[in-house]
Length: 102
Image (cartoon, rainbow, N blue to C red; front, side):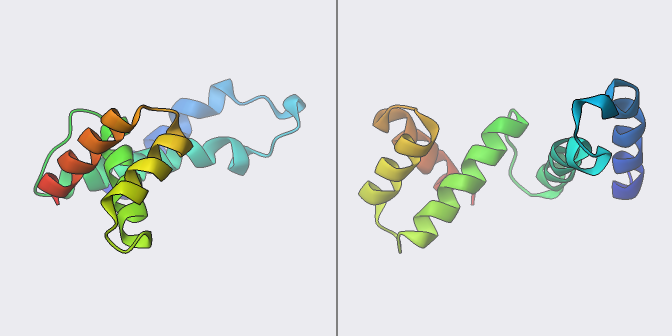
């Protein structure tokens, strides 16, 4: 499906639940949903697949950390674990899966 259409559908889906009395602008409210839509679209376009959007986000996040840590696996695992609250074992598994996919 077309990316612009996907974003429009998401806006229309989320608009009824928006409550301006909560003090948040609509742009701020919809930002997370549009970001997820963009990532989901990109996830479908890439040659490897993930079971969920969260798995895809984790893979992107851990590979970004890996690049920032200049390929230091141990530091990447430690930082990802600290940022997400997962165990270092889980972080190591996520890093291995992300490397395999990319």
